[in-house]
Image 1: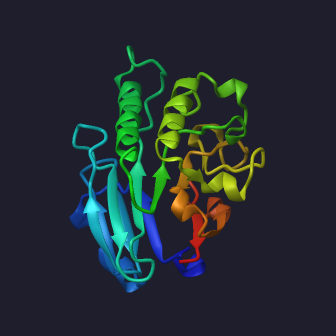
Image 2: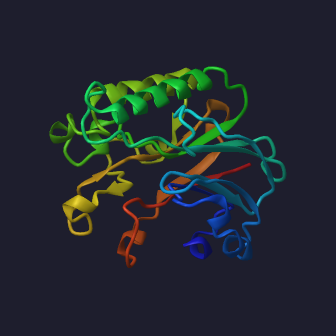
Length: 242
């Protein structure tokens, strides 16, 4: 996929490995010699790798429990000054009630901490990753059926909306593929996802207003669904004129 798409910067979520286990040399051999890897044992973990030079800026603990769910970098060569925030928002468990499901409460608190952070942003920023929220009615295969399903509940949508408003983010997925067009990035393994189009738009690329007008295109690499043992997510690719 990297050879075909020839992306300059690759952001990965849920790498499920510690930093010393990350395939750093394999990616370097493909040209991705600049790497910021925030891993941990078990699940979670994020990594940003690039052909373009960058410096790592920060690793925010928006989960407030030490989980590796974010890494931020700033490009220093071509596109210098652009900040890329790579985030993996918690899924939130199965029950949309923080009183009986602590994971759901942790997800809402994560979004609240992200919102406070976004209010102070002053630089051109791209935030990308698995948000684990499908905000629009057309971002899921059946809006009414999923209103009580974690990832599309009103309380999650409202929380993500507050984050959006905190920095007036531009949702590039919907700028280039306007609602109500189909725009799914994830299909559940539980629902025979390779045969049924029961998708949700959980993965996002949002740009700050001063960056958004440089965006030239955005696409979904849906052919990866046909790979052997594919991910339940597909890649998103956005191109910028910088």
